[in-house]
Image 1 (tube, helix red, strand yellow):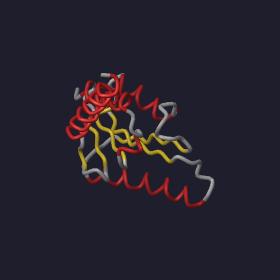
Image 2: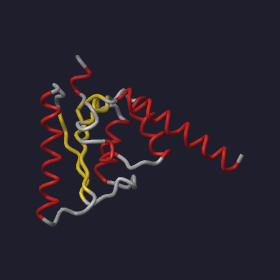
Image 3: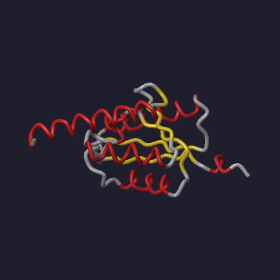
Image 4: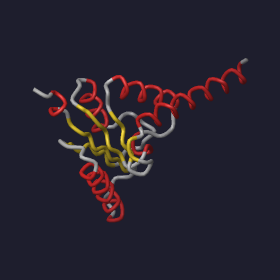
Length: 143
């Protein structure tokens, strides 16, 4: 039995404000459409949608985001598709360090529609650079 075929492709989307207004609803639907189309065009099958509406990317306290992370942790996710990195997280060194290691350790390929497709390796390189710059800055301040 091919265990990889049992795994899902997580499609994650997020909009900061509750989309009670028509424009935000259109933004939310456009995000869903773009990541779904990307997955289909790139042969990423067995998709499952995880969407947080009205949540900031600066907090990790997002219900669908946390459900998706639980799925990753138990080995149910093979790939993640996002519109861009800002949908997943807003810059925070600790969060970036955690997320890069977390997805990497669980063998999840990260795909970003706006950032050029499969960004798994790029994400790891950016993560290492940001963390190193942060550490250098801390050393200068407290050094």
